[in-house]
Amino acid sequence: MKVAVVTQYFPTSLQPWAGHSAYQTLRLLAKSCDLKVFYPEVHYLAGKGSPRIDPAYQPSDVRVEYIPYPALPLVTRPLNGWSASGRLLPHVRRFDPDIVLNYVAYPDGFAAVRIGHILHKPVVLTAIGSDLNRMSDPLCAALTRKTLREAEFTVTVSGDLLQTARRLGASPAASAAILNGCDTEIFRPQALDAAREALGLPMSAKIVTYVGRYDLRKGLGELIEAAARVKEQTPELRCYLVGDGPDKVVLQASIEKHNAGDWITLVPPQPTGEVARWMAASDLVTLPSYKEGCPNVVIEALCAGRPVVATNVGGIPELMDATSGRLVPPMDVPALAAALQQTLEIRWNAEDIASRHTRSWQDVATDVLHVLEQTLRDFRP
Image 1 (tube, one colour):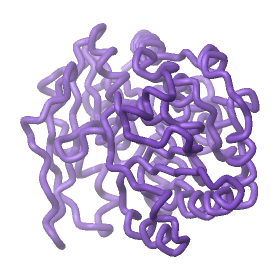
Image 2 (cartoon, rainbow, N blue to C red):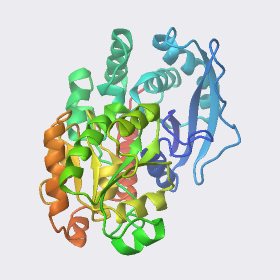
Image 3 (tube, one colour):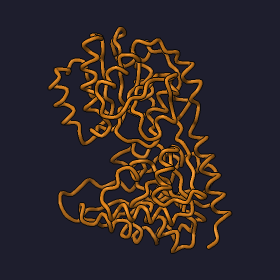
């Protein structure tokens, strides 16, 4: 089976950790299929020139071709699906796939569906969360709904997101949730003391770790406020925010405002193995996000045997319960502070937490392969 993958949700030379869940799935799927990624790279025609992706960059185990298409910032967003599909079409046609797989509903999914219909090939759309939860404007929302209606099959990363996709137009008979997994060889229980020694962290500290994008919609403003409250009761508290993103300066200002520079630390993005070490060194991992699909950081923390304090949004409640951490409402600083404090006070059993969370990327790839095979069997041009 030849599979053309149309998505920008994928690693690049500029963002080698982007599209982690898609990449981990596709590198395993490529062992069972002749698979190639077609990456629609937006090239803005006005405003400041942005860095270009190195076209020679190839993540291991997956072939990828970066194909530029023109756009104007904000102005052409409703047209980007059309523009991307026009530039991608001859490249996908030459590859001659049996089926088209996509990640991110708009504009990538719109382009994938249009290409599939022109080539008379079935399309499997994958919604990751932000593409359905944060649609930018009414026209793009309408194009997203059109994409969901016209795809032969829709996959979502959580049951909660599946209901959203169906409300927006995905067929109940041709849609399913396939939850993310993780690399269970890397994310597994490890000795806390050894991890702290390797990272140079204080042995006696109570450590709270966030891993992800520096984006206020991830609840990081609330996290800093809540951590400041916990610090009053737990002087040994240390908080590490591992990642990068557009709101880094805002976070730095908030840390300074709370005089927390000596115990809240911003840590640059880390490769997967180091992320696992940071989790192993933590007393808990937190994700106080406003909206989510199926966040990998929660899965990875649980597989590593660490309790999680997160918000009860999106697919997070499908991943954990009170036996592995605490759930709180989004944007609720008092509730978040109380959950952090309570979770720090409990003696958790890492092996027990990890034993209930064993879903691997191979499990995900197998599920996706079954959907592709079934969609191809059912397809009538």
